[in-house]
Length: 313
Image: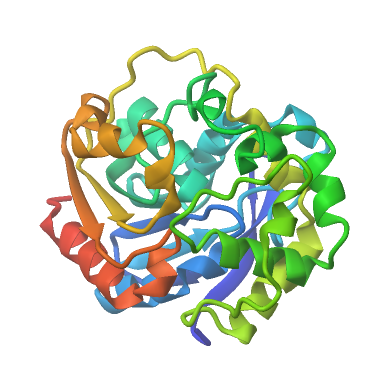
């Protein structure tokens, strides 16, 4: 960790916080989810750098130590596609491997679909190919206390989170979302109320990890994360039948609550997802939660490096 180099890089008008490790000619760019940040990839950065690759993890705009957009309510997931391309340009990287987790998978897939010449291959964890739009997540098939529905409602999550300090919000989300059950609140509850204070942190998530995440979210707050991904997820992207034709790997934890989204498990296991990503391998980790890369890093690192080594780039 002490060898990771930190800098701020101007990308598309924003100063982005970037963490780098390794000097290989082949570059792996890591794309975080929520409530994560560049730090979520610490295990994977070290592993790929030790395997001869250059690892780059950054905080998306509006997250952590990166600059905040002036009008966050106008931002969408498509802005992050431009951000990924802009980051590659800023570092004079012609082509890179992309590794995405949670919502970070979405701009990763879109970059590979729309700009395949810039993407050598793509690996995603926890979220298969999803196209932003009304049917991205079938919230209509879940109770109205579904966390995505709640967080899409302007002001609701802000009021919910605002009852706690930032460290408590991160702890509550990490603990709740490590479960195999979808977080769904009753009518008289908010999402934070689902957390049982007697529940310990997951065994793979230390107090030091929690403090690191909290310190970074204390800098950025939750305004942009609630907009991107949640409040912009249903915005139509104007793309019909996109294809990700680069080699792809999807890693799913069998205990990831995302598999319980309406139709999600069938979409993946039946192979329908390969309509959009034809050259995709799918691997399941039996004990894996939504945070599988932090929970069992050795297994995930092995899968990532094995896949990277197979690519002729």
